[in-house]
Image (tube, rainbow, N blue to C red):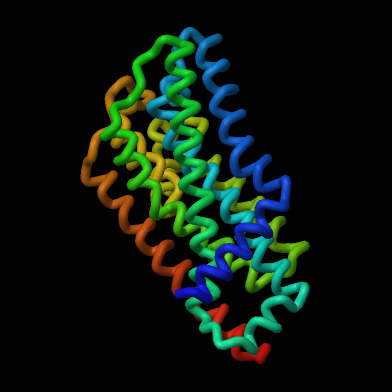
Length: 260
């Protein structure tokens, strides 16, 4: 456990030295929250998906893809500089390395969630609109944890497979897809077959579950509710979660064995 803790502290120091960590992981979600609330204000509140209860789940899910970017950069850079090769000769096990990376991603993701919710609350005070209850806030954070873990382990996976030049580029594809296919900025529930396709990926089901927790209103003017369709969203989330963790562990262990 001490080895994992020491490795986690080292990873935290590495990321804290990179200004992009603060720009994308912390600054970008805040800027997006403000911009979309300005847009909603100019549209006289006629864009339900830009209301705080609907926007916050989307912002959280979308911001986790930047955690993926952080993880891929950290792992690929360690691999490229032969730092990991030197550590592979130490008594540390594969699961300790992976846990040391994953804990940092978890810390960043939770920090993103808390900061975004605090900014959302401050915006609600400025605009004099009702904010969600403390229970809804807790349920929102819990509902998005699987998507955070998926992002973390996909990031680790990309960092193992690709070098420090290619991994960020691949992550940018995930970042774009999460915004489009997650229904973050457009009402997928009005798009028929396209919405059905989006439900086989984890992005949209995660956002929808978050909006159910915050009692958000959809494009039809009705609250998001826990239905059979929304419950089926747990399937792609579970598949991607198990798959990303399993693949990251298998490939990391394989890389560790081949480099010893």
